[in-house]
Image 1: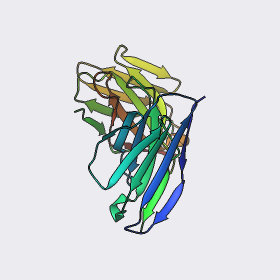
Image 2: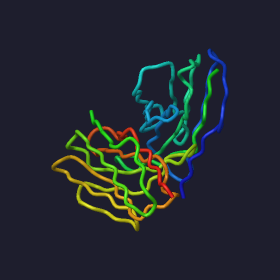
Image 3: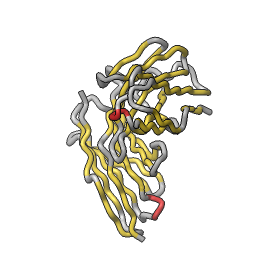
Image 4: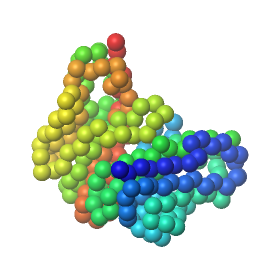
Length: 113
Length: 113
C-alpha cells in the first residue's frame, strides 16, 4: 500500500531564516505531487504541483520554491522566511495521468517568529 | 480556471439530525468531485467521491449528490454523531488539461450532543 511521509512534523523558525520541508511517497511510481498551505482556520491553498522529476508548476508567486529531485520526493524551500509563511504545510500525491483522489501527508506545522 | 464555492461556512446540528453541505463549481469540464474531512490538527482525509457519470453515491451514513446541469454537488450526513464534528472540504477536478483539484473554502460542522 502507499504511504506518504513528511518531516519535520513541527518547526519553529525565526523570520529571515531558510526553510526546507521534505515529502516522500512509498508504494507507488510516477505520482503527481502537490504542496498546499493551510493558514490557521482557513482553507487549502495550492502552492506547487509536479507531474514528474524536475517538472514544477507554481500556483502562487511568493518567496517559496519547490523541487522534485527524485520520482517520489518533493521538497519545499525558502531562502528567507516571512511571518506570513506560518501555517500547516501539507504534501499530497495522486495517480499520474488523471485528476484523481489526492492523499495527504501528516503535515508540517511551521511557526515563523 | 475552476472556481468552487462552498456553503455554509459553519453548521451546527443536533446529534441524530442530518447535515447538508453544498458546493457549486464553474467549469463544465470538471468530472471528479471528492469530499474531505479534516479533524483538528490532522490531515484531510477522503470520505466519499463521485464522478460525473453518476448522480448519487452512498456509503453508510454519508451520501453525495451531483447535478451536472446546475453545476452543484452536495454532501449529506444522516444520523449525525459527535465524531462527525470536523471541517469538511469539497473539491472539483477535470481530466482535461491540468491534474489539479480546486477546493472549496470548507465547512466547520459541529454536532451538538
